[in-house]
Amino acid sequence: LLEQTPVRYDENRKCWDVFRYEDVQYVLKNPKLFSSQRNRSNQSLLYMDPPKHKQLRDLVNQAFTPKKIEQLAPHIREIAEDLLDPHLANGRIDLVHELAGPLPVIVIAELIGVPTTDRHTFKHLSDLLVKGARDDSEEAFQELMDEKAQAHEELEQYFTNIVNERRQALQDDLVSLLIEAEIEGQKLSDLEIVRFCILLLVAGNETTTNLITNAVRILCEQPELQQRIAGQPTLIPTTVEETLRYYPPIVAIGRVASEDVVLQGQTIQAGQQVISWVGAANRDERKFAQSEQFVPDRKPNQHMGFGFGIHFCLGAPLARLEGRIVLETLLAKMRNMKLEAGAELQPIQSAFVFGVREYPL
Ligand code: HEM
Image 1 (cartoon, protein in one colour):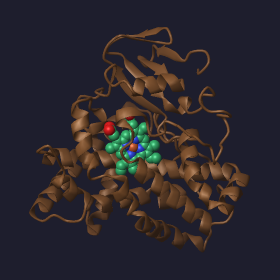
Image 2 (cartoon, rainbow, N blue to C red):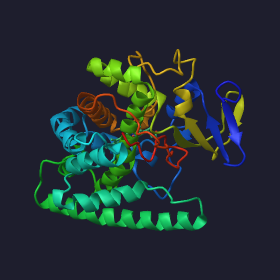
Image 3 (cartoon, helix red, strand yellow):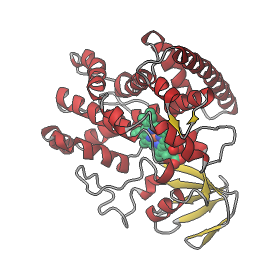
């Protein structure tokens, strides 16, 4: 695909696919030509274009700075250890369900300011938001959509209550920071705060779960690599980056053309859907030497696992921190991690997500 049909139209899916690094970057850095407004019913940051996007992003940025995220490190380590330690005695852990899954949900719940007593309901609702259908039938799809709509409504109500409570008495949490955030007299409305909290769940939980699982997976697939990194933990941050290149949790990003554009000699017409395959771009030999190899100390590593341009992942510092801490914790406490014998990997059913449903270690 990278060599022969770098930009192609797929009749069945009715969309354009873009594969090469240079072209994916072009699409993502030109929001004027390639709009994010491909889902009009979703009014979150992710689906906005300038100038509205910048206004909102600048506001939420105030509450989501790398410095604030770095302060979470000791607590994230505590959560990782609490989740892992009970499994050490029997030497087995179901990585996805017992560590990589719950950790990001707990972190985001605490960051937002969800009381511990609500943690269970919160996890259940946020899992529903990103759940896949049980099979390919029309019936299963409809059932899933209904469940998701219900979860969305319940979360909206839930966060609205939290915003109301914080308006009475601010606390040391993200909702309170969002209430206070202000640029040139502009503030966030209650609805914008509620939508942003929901976006954090949708955008941040499953992606981070897959980052952690994909990183451990590569270490199990390449035991020598695992030994090397276990003996040299300073390599962990670049290993996380290389995982985002090699096994990116998000492999494709959608846009819609706002005007006719010519790319690699092909004319994309205004209104047509364009899928940028960052998973392919990350393996483009024109950009990455030995692109098919996992190089834990690859530098520079300008992968597009977090996207590119104005929508570049807002949660990247948090995802990187969680990835690093979980790898550090696992490598320090579990020697010689292996996928359990006989375990079969089942991919997550989504064209945009790369990950597995279970990973017993
Ligand atoms: C945007 C990937 C973790 C919040 C994005 C985009 C990608 C991405 C590719 C760009 C989408 C586009 O251009 O349309 C990832 C991956 C993650 C991760 C691979 C984990 C490894 C997180 C976390 C959070 C988060 C932990 C927050 C808690 C967001 C938000 C946006 C975003 C709010 C929208 C930014 C905007 O539209 O300006 N993410 N993400 N992400 N991500 Fe992440």
